[in-house]
Length: 306
Image (tube, rainbow, N blue to C red):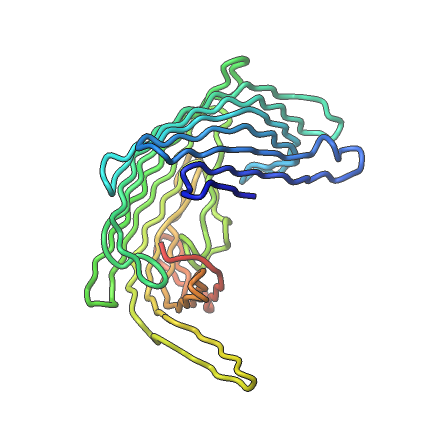
């Protein structure tokens, strides 16, 4: 649930759900988060509290675990200009983890997380995604257990995207993204799917380090389709766009494996000016770009172009 004042300067967000698996876990499995975001001044700030409980698993682990986390956070955002801003956040969370179902706690931590990031975005958007400009995000983070020393890792995110308009409705988009979590109990990243390494299983490639590089040619297919049915019923489908893409990427823990990739074409449609539907077809590339996989992949998803 989201609420705000008339001008949108003060925004409130409420999250409540329950993920219990049995009746005796009902009251222990409530997940609640309350946040307030203040946008009235140039220096924006946000703060909130949360309680999250339930079964979790880290990408790549063969087992799941029960974890209960509660705490709060505070964040600042300061615009350097119309297109650039810096952000900082700090959160403190009490975490208790149990690998077995007998509720025996085998890991406790008081997690202090600090992060700082720089963002630039002067992109100009078309019907299904950006067509011109640049987007850049650099984030550095550090998470540590200040009470027991059970958790200690740092995070690096580098994400750069460049859009070159070749013609009025034709654009060449490129992206390079590098992700890293390194240290004690660091979390794994997951890539694969329509939004990064197309053709590969969604979130199926996992590791504490990951990178994705993409090049995509975006062009118009159909600008407007109007289907008129009896009784005055019309179906309008505006802005059907096409894409030819080439993706490269992988994720790993300690030793880098093979480089994976994909190449293909796709179509995107702006659905009711609310979201974009995506359809891609192509070939997967494996063994360090020495071999195409047999057959063709097809992926259908929703979401804007990168």
